[in-house]
Length: 190
Image 1 (cartoon, one colour):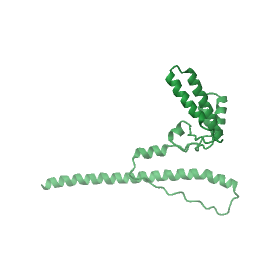
Image 2 (spheres, one colour; image 1 turned 180 degrees about the vertical axis):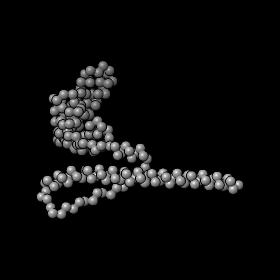
Image 3 (cartoon, one colour; image 1 turned 90 degrees about the vertical axis):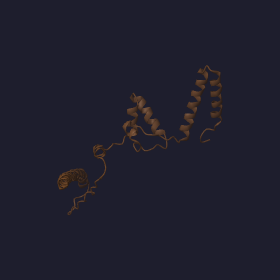
Image 4 (cartoon, one colour; image 1 turned 60 degrees about the vertical axis):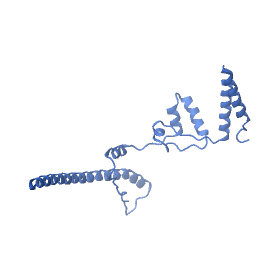
């Protein structure tokens, strides 16, 4: 019985020793990562300080602002931390850059840019989902009366063309009813 207790105790002591070694290793890694973060924070602040010093007259006493405190998220997965730390800051694109990326030639890009600028009530670019950032798109909310009128006219023209090209009488009747309903709606702003 005592031999079993000794064997279990020695196993427990080995496990405790391994945990203490792991704890020591993690503390060392924490110190290393903290130093790296501090160094990066200092590198980021240096260019800003040099720009500020060139703009402002030099003062006799320079007071350095302390770096923001470093917080650690214990209990989160290592994969989540590594992917978050590798993410680069995203540069916000202008309307013309979005138009260039979504069009085939320069003329189309100009038209697309003018269209985007004409729209009112746009959601700020790159303030939404990751897909919007990846594909250089932004949701646009149309609120201008002239744009709504233009869309209505384009929809009516498309509907009339569909009525002319349709061969099924039930579809022609259905689209004619829709056309009558749309034309009965007063134009925005009138």
